[in-house]
Amino acid sequence: MLFPTGPSINFAAVAFGGIAGALIGSRIPERIRISLPQTFGLASMALGVVMLLKFNSLPPVVLALVLGVLIGELMQLEAAIGRVSLRAKALLDIYIPARNGLSHESFLEQFVAILILFCVSGMGIFGALNEGLTGDSQTLLVKAILDFFTAAIFAASLGYSVAILCVPQLLIQLSLFALAAYIMPLTNEQLIADFSAVGGLIMLATGFRIAKIKSFAVANMLPAIIIVMPLSALWSRIF
Image (cartoon, helix red, strand yellow):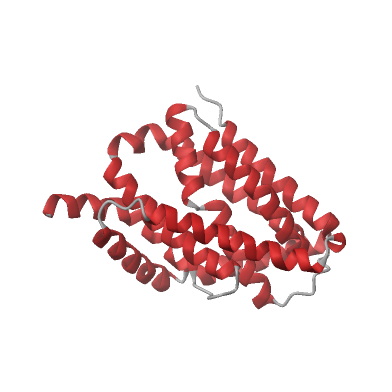
């Protein structure tokens, strides 16, 4: 049985990065705390474009995103995640009071964006599935390096709450790792390409949000990840 090396190391990277950033946040110069998130946003946008260009058929990708946003808006996923995030922050503040002075709106603006980046990025989903099937953890190891520095920088302003994102990230990656043997045989290169493209669009929107260019409701886009493969398979059968 394969050991989930990638998910475990990625978990540790977010946990330790978040703790380290919160501990030394006041010592990080303001110009670095401003410029590095913008750089992370740019990197997310660049990765999103690369993933998007891998599409096999664009119509099901666009349809999945549109329908996914409609489902997300009806379910109010962004609002639900925001409520859970604020409750977790309030609970954490009881034991470790935050010193950032951010408003709830500013906190959620950044927190939800990095939650998407850590937990449901295309790199993380594909990396967990790929390791579960082949044992190759390289993709998640690269993600762990990026996530460590991302967690540290954002924790400088958001506090220790960033570190708790390692928990949902680990649960998602372990689930995908365990289900890989059942999911991957049902896919092909075309379906994975369209899946990657939808993930790229979400990563692109996340990058815009992190860089504070445009605040997309990225959490409401998440259902698109689930429905894109069935739509892509149906589209290939019809056309």
